[in-house]
Length: 338
Length: 203
Image (tube, rainbow over all chains, first blue to last red; front, side, top):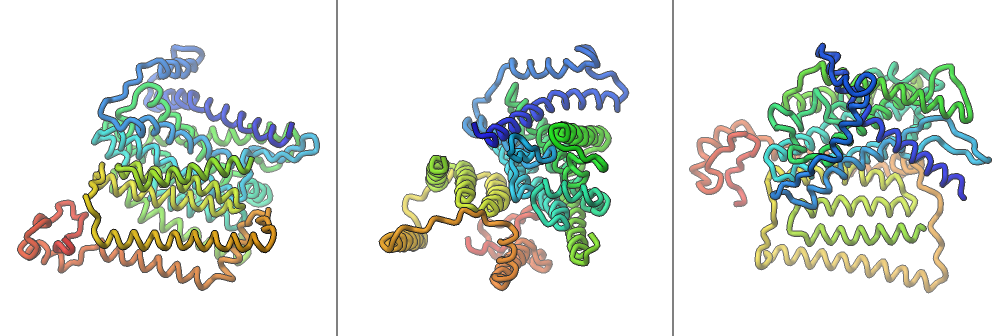
């Protein structure tokens, strides 16, 4: 049996398993976190700290009646949740989670897809996520859904520019699109969020908009659009959209952590072999967990933006900042400061 | 293995591009276009150009086709109404397009045939096109064409801005004189101000 093929399969299994388990845990964190911030107990009956509530929710979603309204465009309606989930699941494959591992004389890089253009591949796959939302809104044959998905597509296109430009500014001093190289660069230099703080801020704000999270969840604004693009979805299909949201949050957190906070590495820690791999995975998971906690914190702290404010922020504030940051970083890199 | 992947995605590309041209619902056509672009991107990877594949997904599938969908949804086009017979302009452009297509295919086949007559074809280089090599070619060897393309895009952007922006004197003239002049489809000024009133030009 080919060792490399086997290793790739194992890496895929680990990544997929972790990602799918993030969803119920995040639902629990979200509900308990919001309860903590609003000074109420939250779900605390099932299991220790209410942890089994997530299991109960999952079972409930699976066994609820799945209602398909008669007026929908059926093929697109059924395809939309899958279209939303697939890009979310595939993007994280380019994020490395440990140092190279030596198994039976084969060097196994601890990343599922060790692509030359890794950062670009992430952005490309992430940009496909909008189709799930747009198709859901269109196929539902519902005004609120359609409005939600029109908002989502305009929002995603606007913020993708700022996000991409802030990511490119990280790539310039590293002079490689491979995320493993970005991590290696940060093991020698400072973590990127210090020299590139401006770009980091742009990335942070844009990633909230990219994942449709509050304060930018205009596409599912309850007070205006019922539930936006997934108004007509029920049971497991609704849960699939939910999963897509949490998994893309996780993937984007993993990208952000890798670009700005050293990825799987910790300063002063240089472990090799299996121990290094396990520690790397644990460090990356811990950093991503902190990011996800931040997502929850922000969601229950800030009110929702108005749509014109969202567009103005994207085009007139974030995009110019991102461009200035890019030029400054490029100039400093040529000058040799970075 | 590689042949199987090629056949699968080549078939997918052809089938989905048939959906693009043949489907009555423009939204399905657009989704077919996304599928075509993705399948062709896989073919690019097989040809050793992963960077091109990523850019194709990032720019075409991820941004441009989303704008197509956006416009379709804003205009609320659900079904294409087929006229019984096409305009003469359409027919001539179709004939011209077909001539160019078959000319290209014919030239390609002819060259392959002649090359094959001269001996076995050299295999494509196994080496992937690296990003650094590509950037070097683009910004050193082909800098002038690159800049010209950039200028072309800039011109297009300026043109779009000029078209979409309503001149200030035309705004007054449009509301005062517009209805009298045009009198047909655009008598009501658009309340949202999103749709520039061109005085019914071309209607």
